[in-house]
Image (cartoon, rainbow, N blue to C red; front, side, top):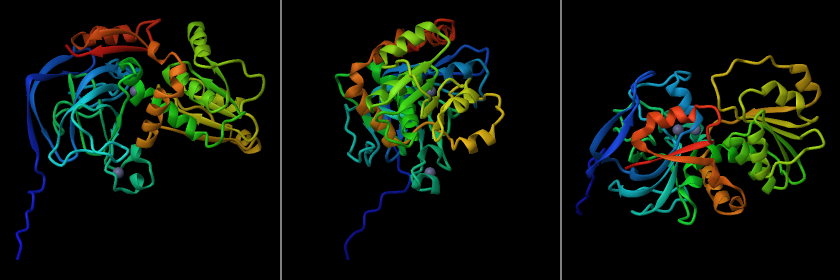
Length: 359
Ligand SMILES: [Zn+2]
Ligand SMILES: [Zn+2]
């Protein structure tokens, strides 16, 4: 009889980090971030350790530190980064395309961590997994300390959609991919129709709205972007926006403030995609009769699936190169100046994104 070699279940690989990794821990509203040293991590099968090249501050990080969004503290915020794989669990880890990740791969990764086996994951709704984890959203401890983008390293857990990215693209283009660009990609897909020749209206010229404009234009749509800020409207033109002279068949609400206008403005038989990234927001009255008589579809989208993140990255490396994505990051600051960077990100006239780089 042969010998059966069985690995002990739950085996983990200990990785020492010299110098130690650092993470910026948020303790709650009104407190400055505390920088902690993380001298080592324990990688499970399917985990990967990534050294962060750049992370960017998303609007939802600003909302959290302002106390407008509940969060379990202590917490490492941040969920938009690009980095490089520096260690893998014993059994390795896979990219979203099914190929093995290798040390040195430059990658972006999903904000969500999914089991891949529950009913929702099996339906493709991995971002709504029954046992969902999220980078930058979960209390530190249970899964180590490197759980958010605002650190020198992030421990990617099995169930994360990891996408290899081209060396030729700048970190400023890639860091926001795992929130803004992938969400925009998912929002455009959620319209559920061929956009060739279709009129699209987008409410909100934040990075989701601007990205959605470029994506829809490249799919053949005529796109208008509505935003109260004239500078943002001018920027939207560089992302392909123009004037739409008819009722839009598709409306993407990416401002969080224009749900009623989005539904009122869509053409008969049209589709309204609600992305609104400034929730929690007050409920709006629903004109059910108008929706029925005009045969309107209203749908929502939250985050994105792994293939959608891959689609967004492919877009940025392909047709998306024609658009000024790199300009989204208006300034770059050291990670250690996170509190000042968050204050700057919430100031009037702030750039779309502020980048953070580890020391
Ligand atoms: Zn975000
Ligand atoms: Zn699941």
